Image (cartoon, rainbow, N blue to C red):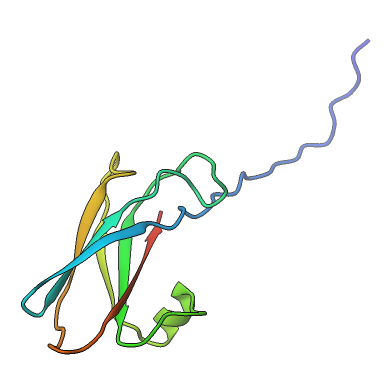
Length: 114
């Protein structure tokens, strides 16, 4: 004889954020920095990448040490973004960062979101 059904339950599998991308080069074209970024191929937990929507490049003239994207956004740090099409995981994209001043040392950091 079969037992009765258990009570119903549901759970959602967490969607981990994409792993961090890698800045592979920064070149300058006048007052525009062209930041080349290699997109991740996995989520932060090392599992299968569940998708990419944007690659964001933060830019400022002081170090990012100890900062997070949330802190930088809250501080008003300029962020430049490019939309990512399906199938581009692991490839390189270039994000343009305009309005830079000559003779200033700039710091760049990249993130991705899905």
